Image (tube, rainbow, N blue to C red; front, side, top):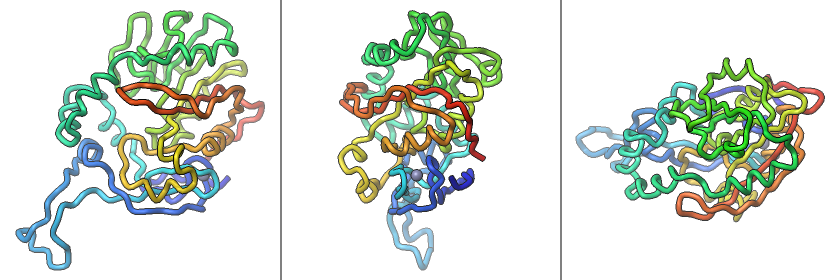
Length: 297
Ligand SMILES: [Zn+2]
């Protein structure tokens, strides 16, 4: 694949490296722009004295990009580490929910539902159990408090790495990236993370550095409605971006895994769930290291 350049504004597919992209104008939603960059929407009126700019509400403009090779739909803005930290530290805490409620009235109601335990972890455990020796040692990468980690009540060890730095559930340990690297795990969980990060291969390569030959990595990402309903025609409908900056197609996800030296051993591309008061779909993959790693540059 083409060398992947980590740019602030992408001009290359972040899954497969392709330069074969199509685009459409879009906006970054005001909550995300405000929390990440401090850029609130602003009304441009006559007092600005601008002669060549039309009056009206100005939002943070970006582009939606779609990869013609793997079908990934993504925003061209790729957050830096500092920007990601501003967006996700104390995730769904008071400052987060206050600002979000300001821009998205009734968010608090949905947040309360999202903060509850998800009701589909039994399904995830049934998906994974045939692949594991029980009880497993688990590292949940981006696992928040651990309240939704599969096998959290049936594991030998549960470590959680998360930039939100939320207090973890009883029996779990919060670990730094460096601490995690010094340990061995049977099961790595990366659930509902890759749709949020600017360069998913960086996250997966951090994980694969710790994995051993027999380790299992469980990955879960949303199958977004727009991808499910419109497939390769989804681009024209994607006019706004929020926290999910990568909308994966099944091919995009497989392409990403292959480029990170991972091989799929079980998958489900169309799992229906109910969480946060709405029904949605997700893709689940269990994978292992391939014999030969193909590191991305
Ligand atoms: Zn691609």
